[in-house]
Length: 267
Image 1 (cartoon, rainbow, N blue to C red):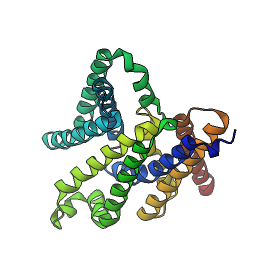
Image 2: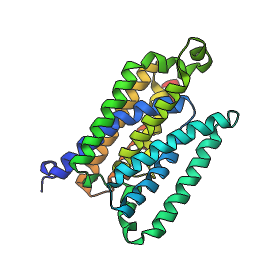
Image 3: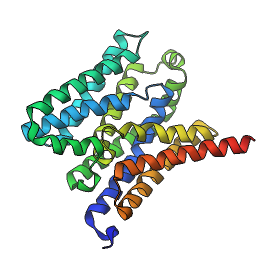
C-alpha cells in the first residue's frame, strides 16, 4: 500500500505543515520572554476542555480551544497580580487544568480512551473541520506576526522601552497568550498534549544555537519545525511508529546535531 496516496495521510501531512509554521512563530517569543512552560499549562487545560467536549457530546477540539483561551486570560490576570512572581500564574493554571481534567475523566469513564488520543496525538484522525480550524489559526498567527513584527521585537527584548515608546503592552501580552492558546489547542491532535510544548520550544532552542540574528532565528525555527513535522510523519508512516513521538524525537536529534556542530565549529 502506498501510504502517500491515502487521504488520511495527506491530511496528516498538511496538518503537520501548518503546525510546523505556527508553533515556532509563537515559540520564539515565548522563549525570549522565559514563558516556555506556558505550552504545557495551556495543553493541560485544553485536555480538560476536550474531556468536557466528550462529556457533553460537542466538538472536543473546539471546547478545548475555548478552555485554552479562558486560561490565557487567567494567566495574564494572575501575572499582573503576582508581578514579582509571574511564574506562579503558570503553576496555578496548570494545577487547575490537571485537577479539572481528572474530575471530568472520572465523570465520563466511557470516553477515557478517546481522550487518551489527545494526550499522545491522533494526527491520522484529522478531518476536514480540524484542517479548516488549523488553516484559520495559521493565517491568524502568521498575519499577526507579520503585521506586528517590529513591535513584538521591541516588546520582548526591552519591555520598558516598548512601554515608554507608547506600545499598548497589555494588548500585545494578551494577544500573544491568546494566539499561543489557539496554536496549542489545534496542535494537541498532532503530537498530543504531553508533547505539544516541544513544538514551541525545541525548534527555537536549536535555532538559537546557530542563528546570526533574531530574524534568522525565526526563520531557522520554522525550518526545523517543518522538517521535523513532515519528516517525522513520513518516518512514522513508513515504519508504523507513533507520529507524535517520532516528530519530537526528530526535533531532539536536530537539536543535538546543532549543538554538536557548534562545539565542533568552535574547536
